[in-house]
Length: 236
Image 1 (cartoon, helix red, strand yellow):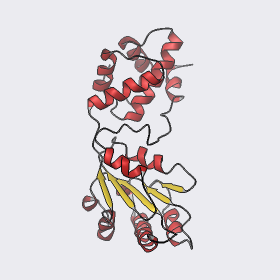
Image 2 (tube, one colour):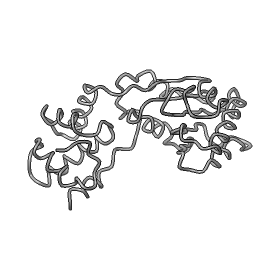
Image 3 (cartoon, rainbow, N blue to C red):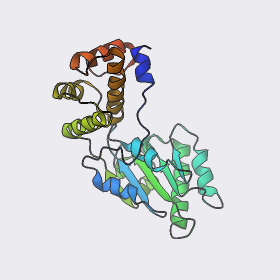
Image 4 (cartoon, one colour):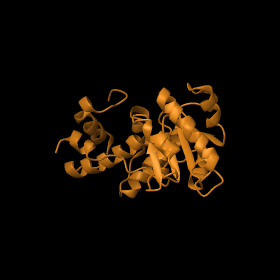
């Protein structure tokens, strides 16, 4: 098994609210834990703050629907125009990327959400984008709707938060990462927690394969062996 294959076989854990590294985003996380039909939540922040993680986490049941902008806007239109809304929660990711059809479908969905909010047909809307509602590159009547209910800015994790998460991830696997390894990862590798978690998993598997302790040289060996196909941010 090549080292690149090891990385490929170790995708990030399925997103959940429990494995989201909270940092300064406790208020947003609490709102997501206690969503209810008839409410809307809009999350915004820079890439890597966990927007998609949270939306996928709350839409992981049969009663929820996750929409990516790579899909046809017809899916949103069908939900908005159904005789009875088929879901209790609709999550829409990367709102800033919606094309004209997608924006029109979301506008219709918002209107239906408001119409049934206080009835037994009510459903929750949870959306995410890369900027505040009024700064979104969308039609004006849709920008205002994004701010109709709860709005939370997701703050990036601090290095202390990431270090704590790496130690916990390693501890869950019975590993101990030295301060040298953690500091190097935080300085040289991706800042996205899903990729950092996958790296810890890969290190665990690689150290077992090589019968070596997890050290900085081992980490560099792993990344160097997969360099052509990984997205490392800096030279080793």
